[in-house]
Length: 262
Image (cartoon, rainbow, N blue to C red; front, side, top):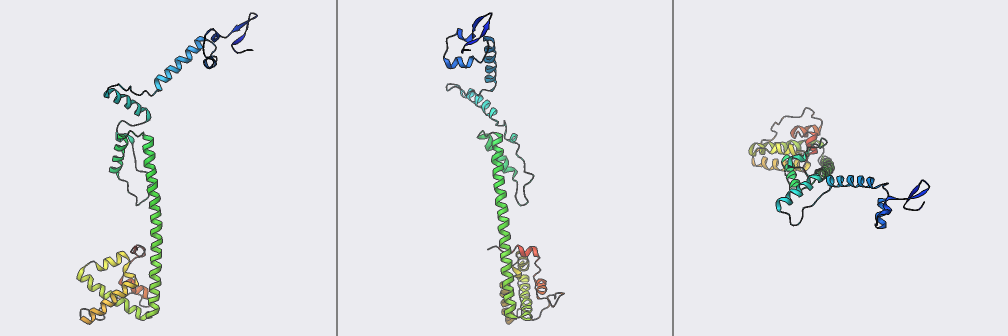
C-alpha cells in the first residue's frame, strides 16, 4: 500500500486525511502517525498542556525587575532550590568518626551561601557530602601517620634505652634513673608542672631526658641543692629496672604512645 493510502472502502481506494493538506514532507511524516484530525487535535492539546505545566519560561528582556525576580524564583523552585536556607535540611552524618567535629554554625553558613547562589538542594547536599568524605579520609590518614610516628618514636626510645643500659650496666642505670627523678622533683617543686609535663608527653621515660636530669642532679648535688639518696618511694619490684623507671615517671602505655611529635 502506498504512503497516504489507508485502504479500500466499498471497493474504492481511500486517501489518508492528511493528504488533503499541503505541508512539508517532514511535517506529513509526523502527523501521519495520527489516524484522523480529531486524534491529531487531541495529541496537540495534551502536548500543549504538558508544555504549559512543565515549561521553564525565562522573563523577557524588557520585563520589570519585579517580574524578572518572580519569573526566576519560579525557575529556581522548579530546579529544586529551597525557599529558605534552613529548608536545605543539612544534618550531621551518623557515621562521622570520633575526632571529627560537626560545626552547626558553619553548616548554617553553607546553607545561606547555597540559597544566595540558588544551588538546588540535591547539589548542595552532594557538595557537603563530598567535603565530609574528604575530611574523613584526611582524618584516617592522619591517624595512621600518627600511629606510625608513635611506633617509630617508641622503638627509638627503646633502642636508646637498651644502648644506655648496655653502656652503663643495669645497676648503674637504676641509680641513674633515681638521680634523674630527684632532679625532676627538685624542679617540679621549684617551678611547678615539670613532672606532669614529662608524664603527659611521654618525655619522662626517654633516655635522653634521663641523661639530662641526671646531669642536672649531679650539678645541683655539687651545689648542695639536693640531698644525696633522698627517698622518693622505691618501686615494689626492685629487681626490675623498667619497673623502677616507671615508679619515678609513671607514664601509662597510652601516654607513651602520645609522645612528642617530630
